[in-house]
Length: 399
Image 1 (cartoon, rainbow, N blue to C red):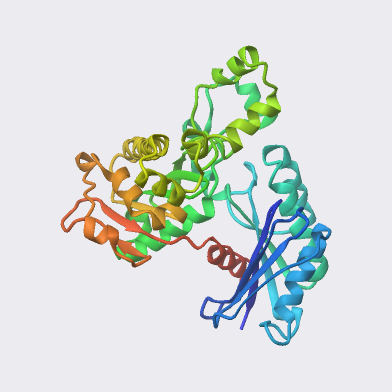
Image 2: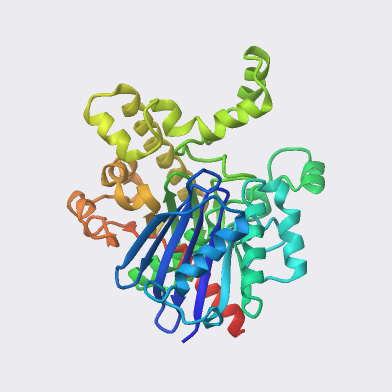
């Protein structure tokens, strides 16, 4: 019964899941939130729905993992007799640059390569490396695997990933489109093919990962051929707090006219824009929908802009693919906000996209929501990046 632990180590939280891979059962999952605050919080849920939540004292980053392992080993709440029961750990790594087109067993050379990508993901890769270090120290006999957010998008052609900048900037600094959410886009593409009963290699898909962070990917025959996020997760769609696509000259205008520093503008574009910035209410769509029901005009505008921009990318990627077999919604907004899905699909009938209002309102999590006979299939597929990480990890250690 191979047990695989998945780790998603970030700056403010560490999320984990423990899988029994014979039947792909999640035995336990949890997270430690509010790292760096005076009262971090540990949440734990076992497969039989036992839950546990408590505040823990502030601690060094590596000690967070000791708390996680202690919970998994707890005689009353845990699911492990011994840490040696974990045969491998799959680590989410945000940026693998151009080096990694698939997941990799972590060696000293791979760690060095991840570290070399820190300038491309300074808010993510250092913490991913911290999680790797802590877990390798606690589980020295387990295999450790890096699963990269960027790997799925390494199949993009050069004319899709290159920017119209001097080629020397690509050669010197690696400036190009990398894309993110790759593990999610890959999982929902594979699951969509299963639902449709067709080989993934026969399908033209557009996958919409819509959460606090948002990205869209054009998937042709199972491979990413274009994606909306770029060198960083800031490019592309309007998001919870990120601006997405803007005229880059806005930055220089704010520097000159507003006397703003680069750090201030970076904060605005990444943390104070998007749904939050336009609405001045919230970054969470649930809060915005409540504000819309109360007649807040800025909340109305924010959601109209969001739906419009997703619709733009769908049209763009249908052209990239030269046709479309299925459109897939996933992540927090994509899976739960039926009214947003409806707004996105509005006026896309010319592409063969026809939403069934009743199916769209269904309480099922995984569902088809297109009208009978519609040429383009519409699917809602809950993402499962952790299972994808565990599958990749198992495949590498078995291989």
